[in-house]
Image (cartoon, rainbow, N blue to C red):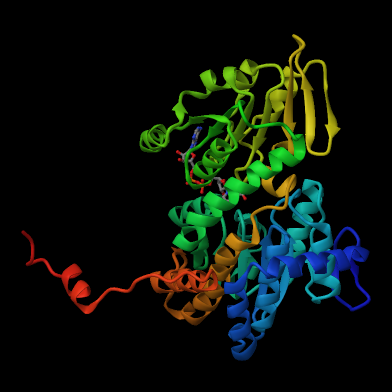
Length: 426
Ligand SMILES: NC(=O)c1ccc[n+]([C@@H]2O[C@H](COP(=O)([O-])OP(=O)(O)OC[C@H]3O[C@@H](n4cnc5c(N)ncnc54)[C@H](O)[C@@H]3O)[C@@H](O)[C@H]2O)c1
């Protein structure tokens, strides 16, 4: 840990990277008009004045714009990484040097450093947490019960984090109210689908430069993220196969025009496999043993446990080595070679830049307005998982449409009356 010349505590790769990070943060800001409007209001009204916030998020250009917005609102913010491989080192440096935000995040940090950084963020004694995947909240509950009485509320960005929080609530251990940002329509419908869809394909191409057209690409999980990945891969000419455990999602995939089959069958015909389920060992020993020579596998779900990497290592009796950035070759005993991208960590944030700013604009509008909402309503809230009120969700959509220059119709009085009546019919 160091303290920069500006007196800001941090642990980042290299503060000299700040100018490049600053330019990239400004580039992302151009495509985040909703967050800009919120920032302008926050600068005037200071709704988070003096609030100690510890945020555990992917340290990207878009997150930097959220951090700047929270600081403009008066928050006393500390940031750490929510994944060991997702940090953009130049952005982390700029947050410290240009924006005075204490940041603990280094791309490629080992797990010890990752958790050391989370603990550094907790040393801030947060009154509000902002999490992506629930690691901050979990460490807070497990290791620092002494800090829990300070915490007024939290927010959570992603599906996996919300699942963990609901489990904490069901087990009676959650000690403060948390807003499930992921559950907002203006978050998962766009971020998970179009954001993960585009950036996952972008990452696979950046890492491998393989042609998708004509290849069989298997997508595991047809939730919001999986739908995005499958549709974008189809658009690039891939022959997409979907695997699922939910019969409804499986029908959806079929009717969207994809082949659906069990993973054991899919693994044997796949040229590429992308897992995006939030589940464990989706690619397990028997699937990994069935892979064709040359198959490329990647994960875009939150944690790196969707692919059973120890099983892959066991199969690779002839060893494994990094061929190029984010591409590791596993050499099986019978001579087959298969390729794991980004150590099985979420590939879009590891081997590419994560979601485009335009979708993070809405996700982080939810984070910013959600933080304000949770603080304003803290007294009425109990330790459970909340969703953002529908009127805030709609307002974010209205602002986004307006920034995109798109107008829509409004209900006439006659239509409003008709839609709320039961008497009229044929
Ligand atoms: N890479 C990113 O930037 C990014 C962005 C948003 C969400 N995520 C993460 O991606 C994961 C998926 O998120 P989502 O919003 O799509 O969730 P979701 O709940 O909408 O979809 C997950 C799907 O996976 C299916 N599934 C579960 N186990 C499976 C298995 N063994 N085989 C096949 N399918 C299985 C479920 O039935 C479900 O349809 C989560 O971990 C989430 O946190 C990543």
